[in-house]
Amino acid sequence: TVAGPAANESPTARHITPTVPAPWGPSVSEIRYRVMYSNGTVAYTISGTYSPSAVLNWDFYSDDPAYGDRFISGQLNGGTPDSPIWGDWSVPVLAIHWDTTPTTTTTPPTTTSSTPPPSKEYAALGDSYSSGEGSGNYLPGTDSASALNSCHRSPQAYGPLLAASGKFGDLKFVACSGAVTDDFFVANPANLNEPPQLNVLGPNTQTVTLTIGGNDAGFVHILNKCVDGPRPSGAPQQDKGGYGCSRNQVLRRDTNARLLALAGAPNGSLTVGRPIYGLADVYREIHRKAPNAKIYVGGYPRLFGPSARNYPREKGAPGGQACTVGQLHKGPLTINFRVDYFDAVWLDDLGNRLNGTIQQAVSSAQGSGVPITYVPPSTFNGHGLCDSGQSWFNGLVFTAGSDTPSAGSFHPTVTGQSDGYAAAFASKTR
Image (cartoon, rainbow, N blue to C red; front, side):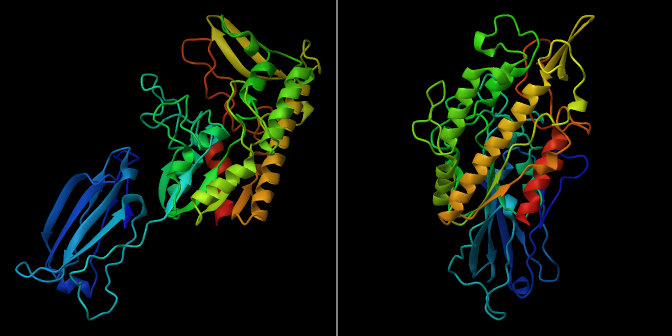
């Protein structure tokens, strides 16, 4: 069994309590356990004498953020200290499920080492909407300028939240902020020590969740073009924008080309030269790497909201109405950043078009025999930045003490991850 953490412990703490039941219990004279890393290095060993008159319970405690890389292995002596009959076993820490009951009720363990069934694994892949960008409390090594890694994996992202239920198995959390489809196939050039995301998949993978395509579609660049307000001094010209982005024909053509590439059109490429893979091909490759896994693909929630009555009148906006999506406080001044109503409708429509592309790719993969399901983000409805309900998104937020926008801007909040994405995925994985 797995328990913890206690109220005064780190959220990464786990207590593992193995129990040796009858009929092995009376026949076991010694027992020893090793907590090991996946490379075989022993973290520590505990051994002792088993008393047949009492159930043996030991707690193993790990307060290490890398606890997912550990597993328990050990030996049971079904003989005596003088004539031992050892049986080996090992179990991943986050997928503890073992049964020490022998195959018959009369035969003790033999000298042949027994291998436990492979543990099931859950791979949480994808981009910033899956890594938990904007939720904070990022895992060590994923929010480090010195280590050149800003994948921003948060334990408050929907992947870890789903894994906490225990039903999905050992979590392999590799989603990375800024990821594009190419990062599934090659090492991430923007973040060190990030191998291709598909590398974590294998025959033990039982569940895969992901969001991917938003960065290939260029949504960060599009938002830079659509938010009206001053830009940091020295900002690149291509990052300067304002009202009226929906009428920018160059922007519209570039976005349409990117969406076509995600739909499988040939020769799709990013501005920086990285290829855009057709989403159906990505899904098929996930299935090839993890043939036993069920795959769940999330859509992208509507960011702003459709109702004009939630956009106050704004004299300078082309549509005559605009929604405030961020504020910058500089001394006594408050600088507002807004999105025009017509631009917001266009941006939300782009999200719908991307979701349509994702759904079509899922259907195509299903036709190829891939066990894949589309997860609509309808749980977010009514919680956009310009909806009347509580927003489940960060607006435009700024790095502390500067006028530089934070990477967490325009991403789901902690509530958005839990009540939005985690709830949506949970409803499909029941």
